[in-house]
Image 1 (cartoon, rainbow, N blue to C red):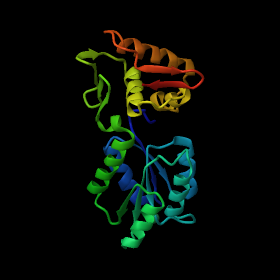
Image 2 (cartoon, rainbow, N blue to C red):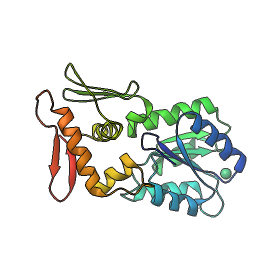
Image 3 (spheres, protein in one colour):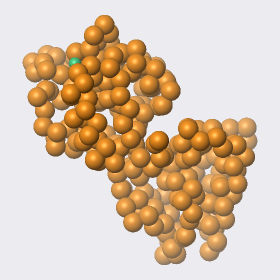
Length: 230
Ligand code: CA
């Protein structure tokens, strides 16, 4: 089962051996790995799990990787998910075509696993900075995802694991309004049944912890919508 602090990566590749190598290396990086053998499976997995990153092979049976990429990038709900395209084609024109369909990066087979993992980290740093041990800041609040410490100004703030993940989620996208069920998905994980009121309880605890030494309440309740930082 995925825990919310683990980035979820979807591998779309029809060759079993290639998938296994990728899955092994991504798991070693601390990722939760989802696998799809073809385009239909890939689209289902994206709808069901909303992965943080997709590694997509160009050469797939039936629907090509390029077509999958084009579809995902043309939909508002999936456009923001970074896609790293894999291809045996090395001609510059193909590379350009790959990037033109909206792929965020493009790696030519046979690739070096070390290089591919570096590119995976680059994409994850962009979309899920807390999952790769980055420090996150908002005004006087600092969250160090590597040491799991939080400060407001000079004051250390002690948080429970749920409040820590909530704060990390807010800090990754200041200003974004999160609906309660989006927070449930991100912080508690989709596989666990938790009432949406639980979100209110933990946001309340996080607020209290952040304001215990004074300072403005950085969390905003948006009526009928959810919560936002700033
Ligand atoms: Ca293939």
